[in-house]
Image (cartoon, rainbow, N blue to C red; front, side):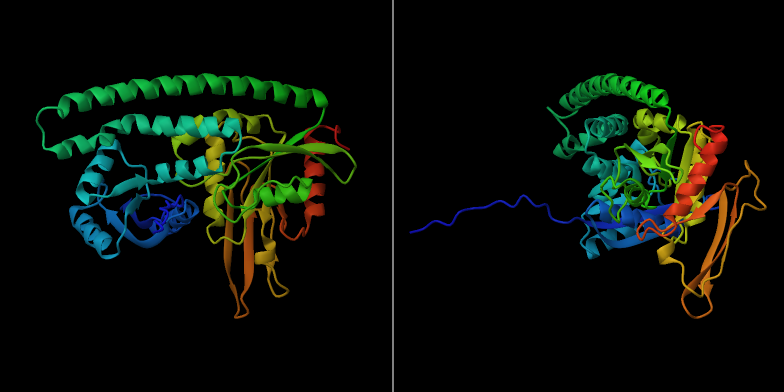
Length: 407
């Protein structure tokens, strides 16, 4: 008699996710609730979840359950009906909200921050990137530890529940605080190393241009086109976490260092900005920031503003910038009308860039009307269209910035 071998699959089953978003009435966000949920769905798919359905609610004020109680009951029923095993919320939940929701829904609950950190953990390749993600995850987890021991409450109380539970929570807090301290110390070493690298770059006499932009704007594709670096470039959010620097040659024959960096996103968690500070400091020493924008995205103006706001928070409001409107191959056609120019929006104005993307007649072409506070170049990184024009504009700006160092 042959006994069949038992095999265990190491491939996790795809989690079925229900997405939930709420918006306070009268909020001044540039993003609609629907647009924010669409982006949350992209994040969920990038993390490997199957998005089953979404639920949205507009509230008069925030609640201990993030939502109103009636909407919470609706989610319970919908979750059971659609067989969802994961509920993802579009904002960072407070520890109290997360505990309340887990008890009410009886299912795993995560928020936008936890989802972004999960994607970061998947994509971090270098030791530096892994350290930064690890730090952000531990800083996020620390105030939420009480919820990790909710299983003790289901024992019904009595001997061996409350006491050991409280003791374990305190033990875990000490362990996590110790881990955070060690990670910060290691990242201080990374920071010192980056300072040395920046010092060497300055001594090399080469100007530095850094690519910045919203996630999935095409920065890595543009970086590869400019430098032939072979950096991972995928049609998904946060495919690049680890900065890479290469030399490229300008039309004049002079060289410039170009750096690819992590993308930004709406509602970028403060823990992520803090953890990646060593990496983002590289942007402060750049002679030129190339702000790459996916011009084919209907939310391009809002995405551009998110990037600008984040740069302002990092102290780079006055940095020299060049807007690179990418993915023109997805927009342009022979019938498309196109008008660009730095008019009507002086530097320092409230909106970095305003754009209108809409149908042009019935032929599916696009009409773009752009108002920019900065020099602007249209390119297609995927096809190589107008890359020479971009290089010439970079050269022109650096000539002004370096007062003739780049001829």
